[in-house]
Image (cartoon, rainbow, N blue to C red; front, side, top):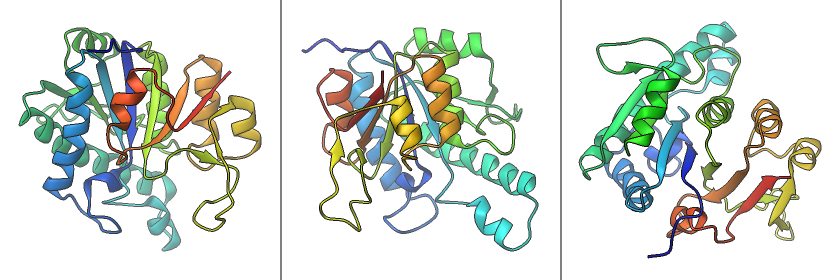
Length: 238
């Protein structure tokens, strides 16, 4: 077996990964497919933290378009991420992967509150930790939550697992001549305003020297390739 290149990673997954393509809600079969990919790298003794979005259940922008208060719209989104976290935790546990869900908003009846040192202890013991409820504050995306958890836990890498295979100089869905970057600096990613991650998350990773790899979650073995250090997707770093 090839030795993993990284010891501890944080994986950011969009909520849409748990629904049918173009759909909404939680599809248990899709959750199981995501769990299969995560279990494959967990078997290589990689320490794994996960942050999952809520786009399959709620988009705050839709509420705000109808006059909803921004803070309240974001709070609904935070609660939706907890639903996704529980669904993914269940799928992982059915594959024999010991999992803990920690939430930035306390809801002790269903999950642990986020405590940094406890999370790091779980990771060191080989448990997958799913961080729910974002940062616990409105106005911050789950991308920023993933960057924050990566910095707090001393992760070697932040993986942004999406439905595209990297960062392009143009929208590849609109421009067939768009070129994918194999490597791009934090500053260039900020200046180009790449849409795979918001500026707050990028800046947080830059300030704390957390490299980011953007890859296609559905590309076979993409997670296994990245933890082995193989070139895949786009690396954002120095």
